[in-house]
Length: 203
Image 1 (tube, one colour):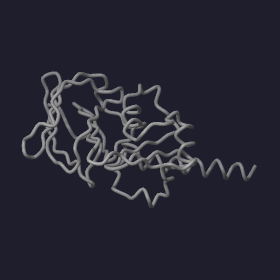
Image 2 (image 1 turned 135 degrees about the vertical axis):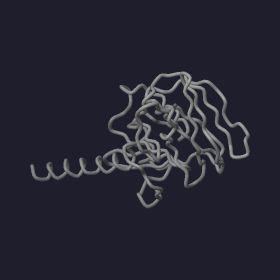
Image 3 (image 1 turned 45 degrees about the vertical axis):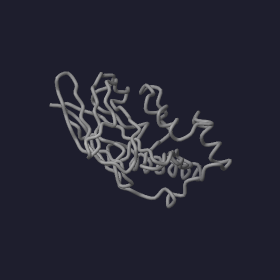
């Protein structure tokens, strides 16, 4: 009984730490996944981990697109998925794996809001929630030279976010219009940049 209790305590502590690192409720700071001891791609442990979470044979970009678009009641509760500038870090109570993202790309997930938001740095695909779920918004993303990277009308996901794959090493401005309200904020698609943008208030 003592051994079992210690195991449960260890699992609970591990899950709590993972939540603190990846949850939108906290502002994460850049860190090296190598230091975290993530399983390298191509290993048996890596393949088993993905299969255990119904992500078998998926690349990082596919997992991000899949998880970010899931209905909230279908999102896994035993998996943390943190989007970094160059990697997707997946973790459960027992293991952590890191998947490299395509070179030259940067995933920016945006949660526009009217009244309520939260701090966020690295987007968590399983826990982050924004105010405006399932709403049509007009999005314009421009780089700092004025070139348009994105200009389209989209519907926010069930988590209140909408995500875009941008070229890396660019900075610029995100502009979103919704119901006659508009907001603009800067973004940075760099190694030090945030993948989770929750500061765009519509007014």
